[in-house]
Image (cartoon, rainbow, N blue to C red; front, side, top):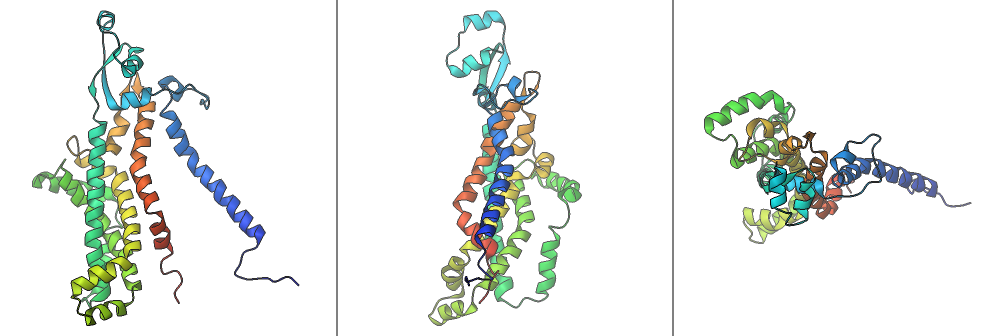
Length: 312
């Protein structure tokens, strides 16, 4: 008789599971691939029906994304020939490049606000989670539930009060205001995720460090934080994804100085309407930082998802 294990999957089960994972990955990658391809289409190819899979690639979308253009008379165009390949692209619409667009500024705002709020959320969340995990805090369960309850309501429910408060405090359309707002929203997620990681770190490690002469802060910094690195990385990914993609508060509270990329990208106008290749190019570039950040921390993310699933 052949040996059989109730825990080891059969070859058929492995093949079926692998096939389903590949199919799922392909299905989820189709929209991303289509967006990336649209960024290299001309405006006519981008809106053609039926959609074009085979097309002549062009960088027109990226040129329109990063430049501001204006229409000129034939006499002006004849007197000022194209100076580079970007000028040649816009000349087919009788336009000239007059300067850079605002996409670079909006993208930089997203970087500052997204990573700034993520750092602050993880920093404060780590300290709060450590306190809830290690110290006896009166009404700790009630406080944790209150922290979690801030995540239950939809953002639009508090949009008007926050708008009025920010206008009174002078925080509207500022980097600091958006960082504080996203931190306030993300900190509940950070506390709850990190507390589970702190609870999984044996208390005996800290007690041994304290016996060896470490202070409480030294034990936290040199013993607890390295053990919680997986949870901190996982939490940072989730906090960054929210802050990076948030749209409602960014539309309501920012107009220029601190406006992020999500509310700016849909407003890109081309000849005769929305410039879909430029929008697709902007979306493609907007996806890269979070994608790279997640790939760099993917090992920690996988460990963080499965952390505590099996305990000995």
